[in-house]
Image 1 (cartoon, rainbow, N blue to C red):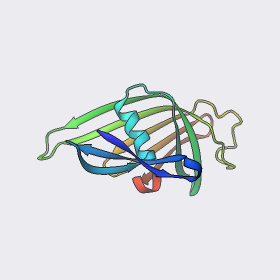
Image 2: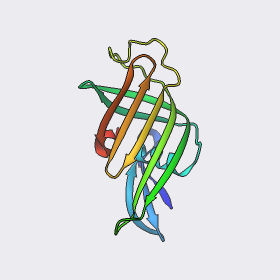
Image 3: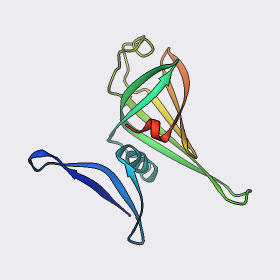
Image 4: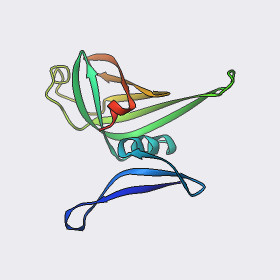
Length: 149
């Protein structure tokens, strides 16, 4: 179970800044909205709708992208051959790049629609694979905190 963490803004507007995760009605952990978006993708197969801002590093250049989630697919692998089980989660996003940063890496192409971004989860870090037509494939490793926007 989860509940929204809300802070108030001016003129009676509210801002959701995260989710509190509960187990048996007791607070367990809180996550920010980026992590909540990823949690939604993990829990709902083929979920669409939603924007996700990601920061990546390509050739020592930092780039921010705003992705519009078109669809997602999650695959779980459980390895039980060790004393404590290991769970690997592969989350594949089919996303459209909505924000086009001023970057020579990105600006080599004029058409940015429907690029494929695969996010692979493994313990405390994410591996981002950004496949872009004609630009090539880049492997980017970043921590959860660095990924948070």
